[in-house]
Length: 236
Image (cartoon, rainbow, N blue to C red):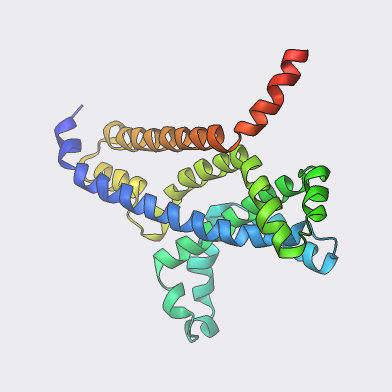
């Protein structure tokens, strides 16, 4: 074990962590905003709204993220019309392509999570809100979405952790993330165990941290559900 080489490479790993976290955060933020709107359309009784969203989530969840990333970064560049368009300024940038692929993929999964949480809203909550004169946007913004997002926390935490792990493929489009740093250190020094072992430890710490944060959020925002379940258990 030549740990001195790994210690000397720690600044590179720090840079990789920064790249991974920045990509993760911006992708999650944009995906969540898109998913909220799509989830409302997904549960709409109007087929012209719900069916296109269903098709989008079906296709994005039915194809590997790596394939989607390659199609965006390498595939679109094959079309001359794309290279000559104003969008080429963005599409030739690895950061933008990685962000776009991760955002669209995460938005598809998050849409289904949010849509399921919205469908699970108790009828009594909706009737109570309507009795106060809430409808349309106010009903969603004040009652349905806050309630649904709280219920969606356990499933959404899995999506966040999964996307964090998926950022490892960003290195395939030249981004210097944690995995890319491990590959570079291994290529230079032929230290497979040390280089990828450090990467695995970093991913483990990030995963443990994310899971811990979501546990705290669940404890805070889902406390009312635990209170409701306690009397039922006591009665049993």
